[in-house]
Length: 253
Length: 221
Image 1 (cartoon, rainbow over the protein chains, first blue to last red):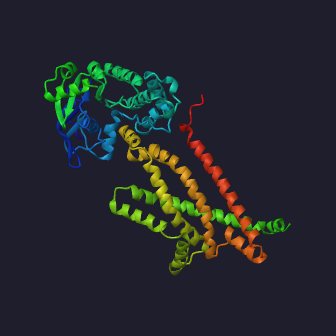
Image 2: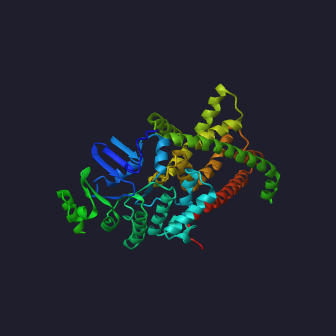
Image 3: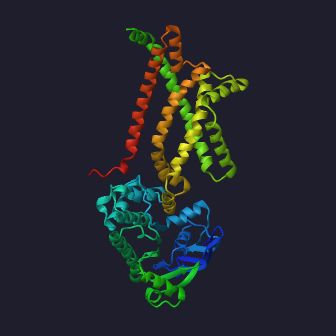
């Protein structure tokens, strides 16, 4: 393995010189970003800035063209078994929830525990119930996704990711597809997770979440990091022109 | 009544022929499913020349009449190997159905949202596990009604092997028409036999469909 020194002080995620192109468009142009253990980082920025792409590079859903990514000291490579190994340690929550429609809530949470972690049926179910309880959906164990609200689906999706006992959670605009009145319940689960010390990287348009729960806000624009720092700084007194113009646009909404 | 008398007289022949039609269709569809899955896999695969090959195969099979395919395979294979009519017919029907089934399988997999596959992969599932637990079960649910439709067509299309001398249902009705001089009765009888087979098949497919669509029904708790 490509083990480098992996001590509690080394960042959990270390991205250096990330370049990502789609055809002739360069979406990410040499990004360096570290995420410390227990840190909550939110990625913000105008649409098309590459926030989601950067997030998806971390677990290899997108392949980078240049640069390197280390997760927990392991250099990310694109061979199948290594990718599966890395991904099992990184939870991901999608904008569209992406629950498996043919499985109940409990089965959604159990399937990868069984297939990837090799847990027994009983163990997996036990853990699924525990996690459903934690996201406030203990009574929905046997419900199929089609019979759940968007907010409930997203909470099941978070539970599904947590069932793998990940070292890191990635959130890709987790509340963007939700009706406004359902956003709160999902953000609450995310805030609780942050409080418990989970390392998180979240692409979000929820500035309140960024302000209240993030340790660091990273503003992406034009394929690079325009500005980063504590939320108070980036969201209230941005130092860059890009930052100021992004905030002005947010205010207009 | 003449109709009833004839029906009783010919019933044993029709029952035996039903068995021939059913086994012929079943064997050919089993082969067609395997071949169709293979062609669909190539068509969706990453190797470009094989994708072309799969597309060409589907185009060729769909572009020519089944009766022509049956004759080409029956007479063509006769140069290489002497096949019983049953196997020549089964191979021709399998060849024909495999192209349609390949397209049905392909469309089934295309209907599975990429996000679901990504979700499975993001949990650390291998390509194969994602295929087995997420893509295939969901694709099957989309494919089932269309596959059922194709199976029904296959049952009826199997009548064309009568023309290479196989005594299946249709051939039996031709024999009956010839020896009784009652073509209307003979062909009505055989139509009823096909109808009965198709109805049974429809019930089976609908039952399967119902079982596999539990997740689409509102909760009944």
